[in-house]
Structure formats: structure tokens, C-alpha cells
Length: 228
Image (cartoon, rainbow, N blue to C red; front, side):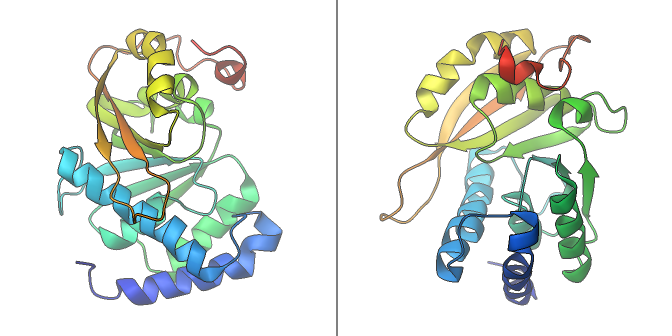
């Protein structure tokens, strides 16, 4: 059940996406029906999966970071559907940051803020490091890289959640060393409730359970070039 005013917010969000897409490079999906299904629907599906997996309480004010959201996915739809969330969108491209700030203002999403930074930089910022209950990321990086981006942002006990397709299990195996190095543990993946005509995805979950090594994240660009 969506909260009051959510449908109107999604309608305005879609209009802003169409208005800003050419100048900010927000999405390759230009058909409005497909955008609603892929961007909005899959983001809400992630919220449902996280609730069912116990990684996010229903109606609880969790602090969430969305890494590399681009046009705001999955974080902005999650914040529309669950207004109690405190969402920090961490985006490296300034034009997209400008768009996300306009979205937050025009949709009245008072719990949403935007940080212009690369993920590696954000993980070193005192105001962000080890401060989040949940980090979400959609199609940002392979798991070994994403673990180094995300775990420094998580408080102990916090969870990284990322939807993955057919290579998800393989990526998780490849990330085993990174997960151990960053003081995490892999949790059982959760099914993403999607329509039958959409390629299946699962949500891969990594909980931060141990102390964080001061060496991580490494400087910008290094995790991608030399994954752990």
C-alpha cells in the first residue's frame, strides 16, 4: 500500500525524468510505460524484498545510502513509498545531482539529500563513513568492487543490497575475498518479486559484521582497476 500522495509524486517524477533526460543523461529508457515498470516497479520490488528479508523494517526510519543512483533509482521510489526513510543519494555527476535535488524539492521529499562525490570519496567522509543502516546500488559495479564501495559506509550490522541477474551467484563468489577483507558476511539472496515477462533477478545481501580497516576504501579508481 502506497502512502497518500505517492501516485502524484510518481507522476511528477516521471515528467521530470522526461524533461531532464537529454541534458543530464539519466536513463536510456525513454518509453514512459517501460520507465515506470523498470525504474519505479523494480525499485518498489526491491523495497518489498528487503522488508521480507528482514533487512529493512516496515515504517521504520532507516538511514539509507543510494550509490550511483543516476536518475534516482532505486532510492527515490523507495523514499516515495516509504517516507520514514532518510535517504542520501551519492552521485558523482553534477548534472545528475542537480536533477536529484530538483526531484527532492518538487516532490517534497524532506528526508532525501544529495551528495556530489564518488563512492570512494564518500566512504572517507566523516559524516557518511560507518553511518548507514542500508546501502543500495543498482547496476553500478560488479560485487567485488561494490563491496569496497559500500561496506565503509555501513554501520556494524548494516546491510548492502544490490539486485543482480544471471551472474549474481558468480559475482558473489568472486567477491568472497573483498567481503572478508572489509569485515562482512554474505547473507542468503532474496527473490525480487517481478512480473513473469521480466528477466529474473535476486537481491544479494552483505552484512557488515566486523571492524573496518582504515585502508578502505582505496583512492578513487583503484577498486575498479584492482578489485580485491
